[in-house]
Length: 142
Image (cartoon, rainbow, N blue to C red):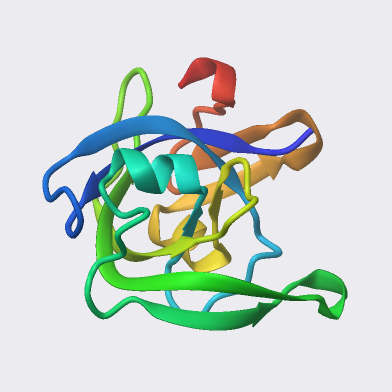
């Protein structure tokens, strides 16, 4: 099992103000310098970011686990993101959108997990909590 959380994504580019809610996979192995979020093409379309990419979009090659290189579309200052649960929403965190063709789910980087004050309690059981809280959560409880 892995840890997934319900997230709200608000477009700051593309279809500005457009908001969607979906599930994100927390990937502590996705190392980034700053908080980042990979979004699949279907999510980018819903936010008005694909196929017409916003001005200033960078195309970069990323190296993933195992040394494989993949091409991504990197859009700076693109999304306002937050975790939403049945009883609490996290503070919004602004991130670039990293559009990855072929990806099927939203992936949150290690720095995004930290910025959202998430503690991974038991990855094998999908359990997490917000830093400073005792309440243990799972994707089923969001």
